[in-house]
Image 1 (cartoon, rainbow, N blue to C red):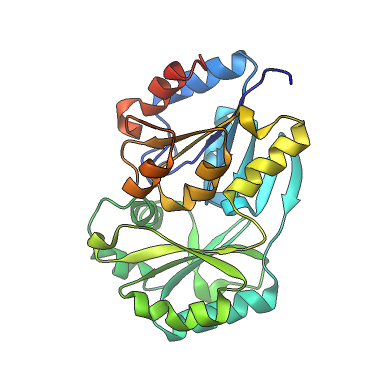
Image 2 (image 1 turned 120 degrees about the horizontal axis):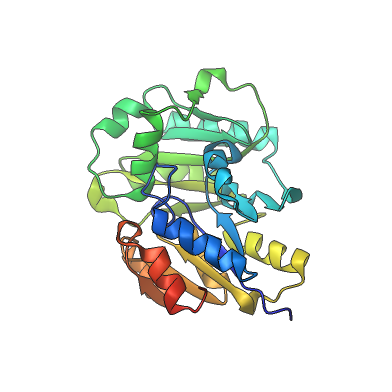
Length: 275
């Protein structure tokens, strides 16, 4: 054991305000200081490479992207597992015929149903995933119309709908291949979540990096805020939920730190002796 800690950070609602690409300066200082001590800091996110790319300027040591479907250490890709084309088509077909709004994430682009923006405009604030998409659609993050999707290998489908029953047929057809990760905030009038290939998740992304570096999982610390962080939280040696996060995730975590807008990462890094 070489004494290094591996730190895994979700982005939306954890490292940044949902949908934004500039972390608080206190978080950036904490990340730099812990790296200077020899620790490694990885992004661990549902975002695809294209949507996390603006954050790479801050010098992370690698990533678990696409909810675990694309994993890197430094510049080396150690895991890359897009969905098969026929599975992608089957999933989109059943979701669309049940009125479910979808966004499809490839490595370098995101494709969204054309009426998704109208759907989101009527939703209340407070859900970090909904806020991420609201901001993404109103900024220059290049979400392209679903009609432009050209069959490029995809890693994940983000789903939004009004009633859980709209997912019944999709679950019947797809639950063997996909984990339906649904956020636990129905009071916002919108069910939202992700269909994630059962071949991977954020937790297994953490394990792949540990194995690659020869560092035991007991030396890992993970930070998240929503239910798509659950596998990471259940895998890492020490799990931390943000104060602005899901109440369910807080109950599963070893500790809760202040929210992203209250210098939460810096305060947690201090408490954990990472600085």
